[in-house]
Image 1 (cartoon, rainbow, N blue to C red):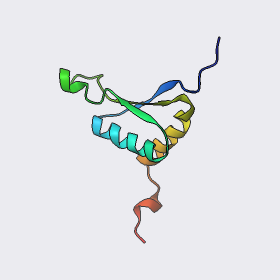
Image 2: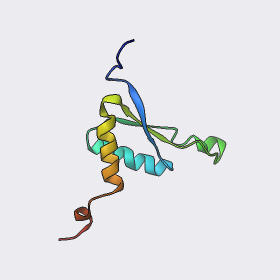
Image 3: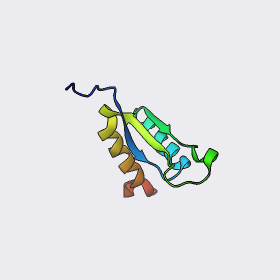
Length: 84
């Protein structure tokens, strides 16, 4: 069996809504990680059906770093929120 190609793409996470998906995408891009949002407006054509949530996809080689970026983005350090 062949090893996975480094250019393989994997689903990183599912976002609760399209706006959040694009916020996370921008955070990843800002860190130099190529990312795609899939299904971000799929529910517009079929209505609000559960299971049709936007997903973020990244290259397999970037997945670990991308998870760290999203974790930091979801839980910013206390220093970032304080004014000097």
